[in-house]
Image (tube, rainbow, N blue to C red):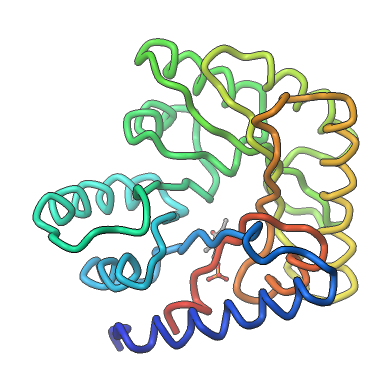
Length: 241
Ligand SMILES: *Cc1c(COP(=O)(O)O)cnc(C)c1O
């Protein structure tokens, strides 16, 4: 069933309430927590409802989809009369192959899934060629499970240092996926681990001023992520179901 405008507004309200609760519990300012609407499941028509609801940070997990969506949206935005709550920004949240680096840089998208030096070097080289800066998060595998993507915790500080030194690449923060098990204790543990790593890197001045975001929390676990210090939530189904 296609998602309606009303549905998105109602879901967003629920999500904002749960974010506020988690912030109150941990004495955080809800303004620090941003939502990236992961639109992979919705019809392109519905993206305008997302914008109308005030969300301008949009995410996709596959590059082909991201490119197609960005193109459609560009056409729509040229015709749109109502003002937006900010500039639309695309986020590539899923795994990215090196040979797709150019497409991401072309779109000016932020990449949440950088987990190797080779990918980072490719993004950097493309960004230099195009005289742009590409924003990236280092994806860390913080769960005890064998997840496919994300650098191991033990190798993360070194890799972050290398990313921070690449030209035209801006390391804006760290990203992690909660464990697949969805066990709340394991999930909390993974998110807290990411925050600790983040604080350790900040202390060592890795990434400088631009390094200040924590991308963690999805539909099934975002309240736990907020309690652990998330500043960017990547939310799909909780918005669109
Ligand atoms: C799909 C996806 C999300 C959003 O997932 P939901 O559970 O639908 O909120 C977030 N991050 C990544 C990397 C994804 O692929």
